[in-house]
Amino acid sequence: MENNNCRMYENMYPDAEDLVVVQVKNVAEMGAYVSLLEYDNIEGMILLSELSRRRIRSINKLIRVGRQEVVVVLRVDKEKGYIDLSKRRVSPEDLAKCEEKYNKSKAVHSIMRHVSETCRVRLIDLYEKFGWDLYRKYGHAYTAFKLIVTDPDAVLGAYEISDEVKAALLKNITRRLTPQALKIRADLEVTCFSYEGIDAIKEGLRAAEALSTPEHKITIKLVAPPQYVMMTHSSDKEEGIKILQDALDALTAIIKSKDGDVNVNKAPRAVSERDDRLLSTLMDELERKNAEVDGDEPTED
Image (tube, rainbow, N blue to C red; front, top):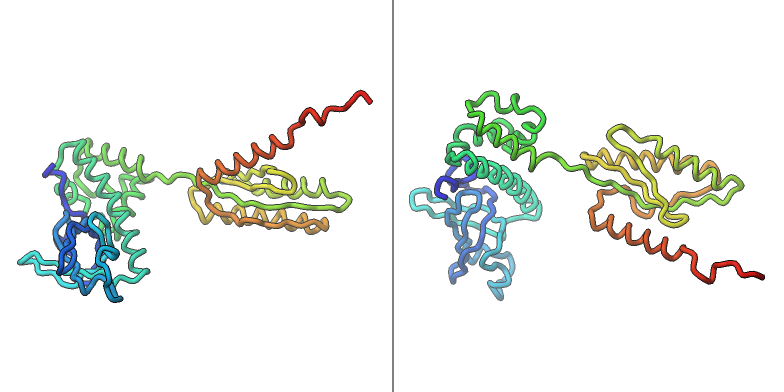
């Protein structure tokens, strides 16, 4: 286990003004003792006066043992190992930026740790050989890892890495960082009460689906007249949303030219599996309600 414990970054200590993620270990009268998760769990302290800008009525409501917090480094005494931290000086913008960086670093660290365990190589040796250099070259090793998915030689060619380590690294990066296709969906209502209403709606829906590309196939499903859903899959969220928006614009232009109307209830957005389940349940329920029952059967009269 000692061979798999290592800091995430090259510097052994953070610098003053750095944002770091910590886990609270103990709450005392002077403040909270924490471990810096990105720096091999070295100890730091959030002083009581640095917990909140407001008057503290209950310290347990502000900070709890086991919780992760984003804090800013005030002072670092490398000789004595003292690190003073502040929670109250972290702005909402800093919070989001630090969490994003930490999540990327954690993903990189997890991959490196797995390669270390698989190939029986010390984790710090992997970082010293190429990991920390990737941080310097690409701003963050996570960026380099994403490039390795498509062109491993361009990123790793400059380093002397054994075939075993390279194979394990590629396998882990491909499995964890290959982008998954997102489902993009728009919910809309299409109506046209003119003489050619049905044909106009068909023409508009076909025109929208005709904007499909090899990477983005557009499908339109009827939920219940006049409700439709328009969907596509995309590994690029913004591009997928743009494709659907273009399809909506094409549909709207045709329907309005036929004196109809398109009402977009929910604009194109990435949806989760839960959203899909809710849609499927709704469609099943509507289908059940529309199914014929005994009272619908024609009588002999």
